[in-house]
Image 1 (cartoon, helix red, strand yellow):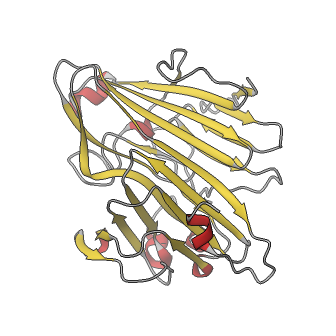
Image 2: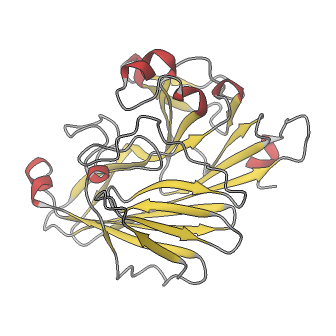
Length: 305
């Protein structure tokens, strides 16, 4: 398969995925985290903070961290759980998923460790398949209960996406939906806007969202589409200027060129009985606009056209 492992001696081995059209992705064993996704023109599609700390045990501010067994602070564990702070391993047995074919694919696994059982006393296997194909990046997370009793968890894939200018970006597909506003003690509201635009800090979890959400980037004349299965909720996050300055691993001006649009299962936690397995899926893809004005028709994108 067209992938290779690179070890720069920094204790952060990374897997480089490539495919014939020229796109690439990088996945760290630390956190099982995708940290780069470049299209066939070598443009970076994911955001990485200019002050990101690439050193355990810190979480890495950028790419696509896996938040498990807790999304956000919705529980007693550390923010976003511990999976993003652990060293994963290559998974040689990805059954029952079919073996990889021509796409550039890697399978990773994280098993419960002694240090985790102290704070979350459950035995589990968390698997992740990453598939790179022309114009697409697909992640398939799976959780298996290897314990002798049932357990419940929340999970999210936090997609740090690169945008040209956050004030010129709009999100389509979340209109009329209910959301929790984390800036107002998780109070529940209903989205009133036809499209979501940004002029300040946002930290929301939209509930029971559609399987397809679009981010329209007018300046780049590009639409990024998030498709997802088994992950009914979607989180939006941008810290804006004041919060950005307060985050030690976030550049003061970085908020202008990023947006988090996350696939998540939050409102209704997932419960697994012993030996049961849950599987989700998300696919990120890009659609270029042929309109010189930079205006896109997100309705066509959301309709699959």
